[in-house]
Length: 231
Image 1 (cartoon, rainbow, N blue to C red):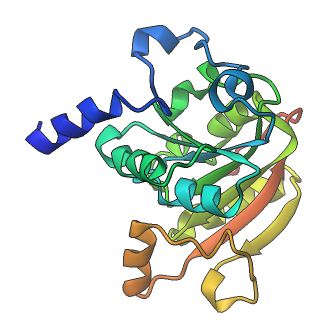
Image 2: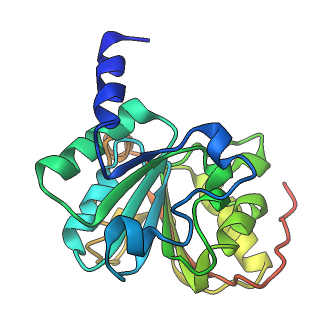
C-alpha cells in the first residue's frame, strides 16, 4: 500500500463524520447506528439520502451543498477515494454529510425500516456479465426495500447504455413508477440542479463524447421483484 494511502486512512480515523465499521461488527449483525442515524449521527430529523458507490464523494458533497435541509451519506468500500469527499466536508464545515465505508451488500446491517428517503447510484460498475452484482438488480433492490420509505426514490445516473436499458426493463417489468427517463441527459430538456452535478468520472465520459443516461423511479417496498430475461 502506498504511503499516501496510509496517511489518508490514518486521517480518516480521526474524522467524526466517517463510519468505518469492522467486518466482524456488521456481518449478519446490526451496527449500532442502525435506526439511529438521525438521532445519534446527524442530530436532526431531516430525511436521509444515500449515494452508493460514492467514489470521491463529489455527488454527496454537491447534493449536500444544494440541499442543507437533507442529510446525505456517501457509501463506498474504497477509503482512499472517499477521503477526498470527507476532507472537503470538514474544510467547508458541512454538518449534513456523512460517509460510510463498507461493502454495499452489507447495507442492511446499517439502516432500519423506513430510515432512508432516496438513493443515488452514480456511475456504478455496470457488471455486463454478472447481473446479480448490478446495484439495480433485484438482489440489491431487495436490500433497499428493507430500509427505504414507502415509494422511496432511486436515481440511476450512468454512462452505460446497457445498464440503463437493463434497469428500465426491470422497472417496467415490475410495474414500478418511472418519474424521469432519458438516454441522453444533456441533450434533453430536463432542468434540475441535482442533475447538473458532475463527478470526476462523468467529466471524463463527457470528454469522450459518451451520452449520460438518467432514470428516476419509485421503489414499491412491498412488491416481490422479478428479474428480466437477459437478451
